[in-house]
Image (cartoon, rainbow, N blue to C red; front, side, top):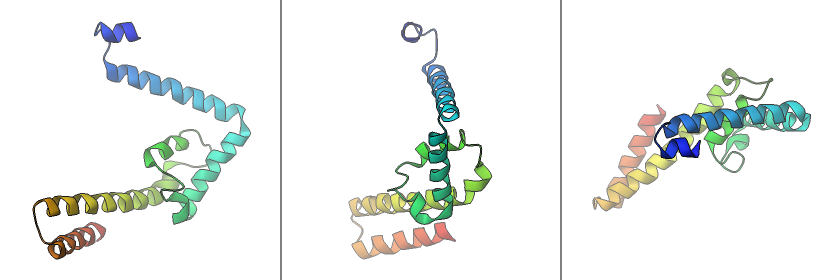
Length: 128
């Protein structure tokens, strides 16, 4: 694989996808052979769906690392987590957007009160 990449016979994104598929097959096999792991996956997903505390950054530091759990559970599907996932995604995105917007507006020498006012307007428009 490395030699083919270096000779440019294979595109790196194809190799990355192939590696992901192998990792996914390994994950599926681990869950199949270890019922405790399957229960842990289901518990994490249940907590994520059930309460905001189960999906905060302390419980789920990266939403992208949560999604593969759905591919190995037999109990839950995307339909089960979709609403909770998007609520959490928007919460995290808004906080990041506000931080970036404040940083940008301060670097443009806008007053702090104007920056906060614009940030609040932005967040309210995203939430409605």
